Length: 235
Image (cartoon, rainbow, N blue to C red; front, side, top):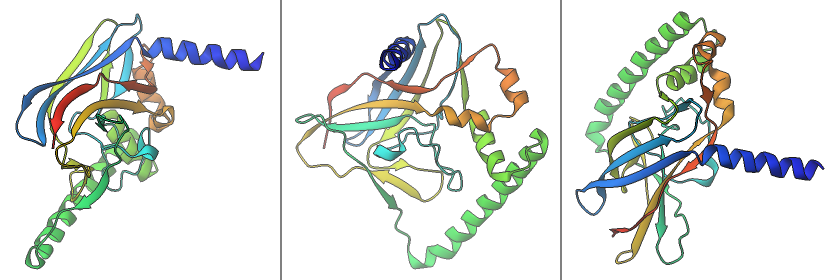
């Protein structure tokens, strides 16, 4: 009986979230690596949802980070859609690798000063936010700040869309110095798609007052996989 109940729950889960459609399309191809991408979410259901979406960038594919809550110490863009790049021959997702920008020796002090300035400004920003929202733990306040600033309301039968630059060779993990890239082979065709994945534990970082604000909405959890764009990216 327990086995059947689990199966029924899975079926209901899949039915619920197939009613939120995720579509990506290329608006403009700038060069081999860069595209202007249109991201579109359509709520086909009778329910209204709140869904975290970071519209400032993308994430690259790492199997352990698909729904990863992550650390905010590096201001990681963990609500950004994940780009899945696939070799069109075997259709397997290519795992990205992390990189840092090359800096000349003379530029390092200037960059360190700049990064320290950003860190100090953010520290003040998050402390002010913690005071405003009456959050005692500064790490929770940072996650709360990022979450609340990226919540998208998607009412029943409503769509949400935006255009954004995608650079396959430079997917920024944060607004700082690290970024992700893909190791790809020349003369091979690649397809790409995208996935939005939200772990339900992230909503534990909302305060009771914030949850009450959205009590008329369902908090989205789970994965939404986009359509696949075939043979549009060739290195």
